[in-house]
Length: 323
Figure 1 (cartoon, helix red, strand yellow):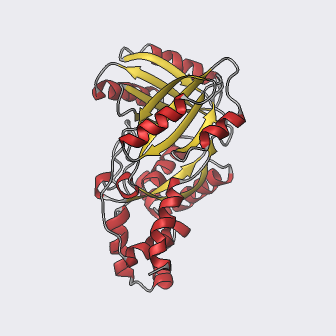
Figure 2 (cartoon, helix red, strand yellow):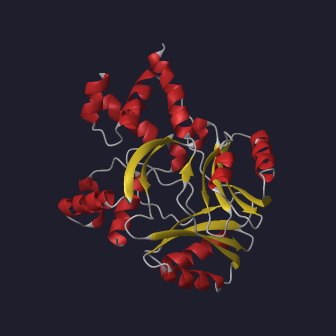
C-alpha cells in the first residue's frame, strides 16, 4: 500500500458511491489503475465494503470512548463480554498492556452517568479514562416515504446506481438525484470528526444527514495499526499544531486523529509495515513541544457487540412495512 492507495481510500471515505472515473480524474490516474487498486485493497481485506451511516442528529446519540485499566490479572474475553452486555457499549478490544478500550453512544447526561457508573463498577477495574468524542452533528431532516425507499436501497447496496434505484422504487431518476443530494450531498460529505482532515471537495457535514462511508481494516495486508493518545497544552490550536507536524513527517503512516470533547486530548491513528517503526514515531511525538503526555495503544482485534446503526435503520424502515 502507498500514498495513492491512501488517497483512494480517503475519496471513498467522503463518498463510498464515488465512481472510478471521478477518482481517476481527481488523482490524475487512469480508470483502470484506480479499479485495479480498489480491487486489490478489497482482496487483501483493507477495504471491507461501505455503508450508509446516519449522522448524530438523525440517530439522536453521540459517541464516547473509554480506557479501562485493571488490576494485575488484566483483561479476559469473559470480562470483555460482560462489558459488552451493556446496551450503551458498541465495541471493545483488549489492549496489549492488559487494559480494555471500548466505544459506545449516549443520548444525554443520564446516559453518561449510567455508563460511567457501570464501567467503574466492572470487576477488576482500577480506573476509567472516559472521553466524549468531538463530532459534527449533521443536519436534521424529516424523512418521507420516498426518502426511506431510497435509503433502504442504499442500505442494501451502497454503490447502487440511480437507474437501479428507480427500477426498485418507481421514483423518477431526477427525484432520486434530488433525494441523494439532500441526504448525503452531491459529492458526499467531509468526515465529521477528524482533527487533521483537509477539505477534499465534499459537502460540509452540517449540510447533510447521512454519510456513505467506506469500512476499512488497517491491520490487513501485513500492516499494523495503532493509536497514540496525546495529552496536549490547552487549546484546540495546540492539538492542530501536533497533527500538522505529524502530517508533514508521516504522510503515509499518520492516517487521522479525533479529539476528546472535554479534555485537551487527541487520539492519532497510525499505520506501519514494521512494528519497530512505531517506536520511532512515538519517540518523535514525545519531542513535540505541544505534547504533554504520550500513551501508545496497541490492541487485539475489536469485538462488535451491537450496531446502533442497524437498530436505527430497522426502526425507521418499519414505516414502509407498516403504513
